[in-house]
Length: 124
Image (cartoon, rainbow, N blue to C red):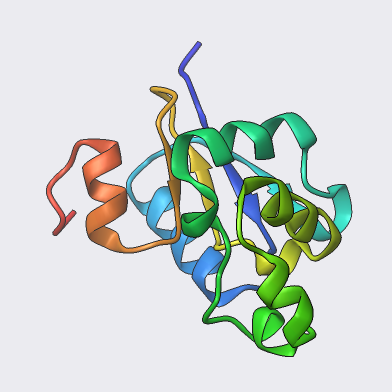
C-alpha cells in the first residue's frame, strides 16, 4: 500500500486549496482533516508543537489572530499557551499542516516547500 500524506486545515482556506491542488497535480495521495468539522487532534497538535515549534504554527498574520483580544495575543508566549489558543481557535493555526508520507511535518504552503518535501524540483 502506497503511503499517503495527511493534510490538516480548513477547506475554504485559499492556501489550503492551493496546497491540495499542488498535491493532486504532483500525484501525492492524501487524506484531508477539516479543523472546522473534526477539531484539532490533541496528539497531533502535541507532535506539531514538538517538531515545528509553536511560533511556526500560530499564524500571526491571519484574520483570526488580528481579531483576538490583545490580552489573549499577549498571553500566547509558549507551547502550552499556544496549544490552548489553537484548540480554542483552530483558525489561528498556520495552514495547511502536512504530515508527509515519510513522516516529516510542514506548516504553510509554497510550491518550493512542497517540492522539497515531495522530492521533486520546484517547477513540478
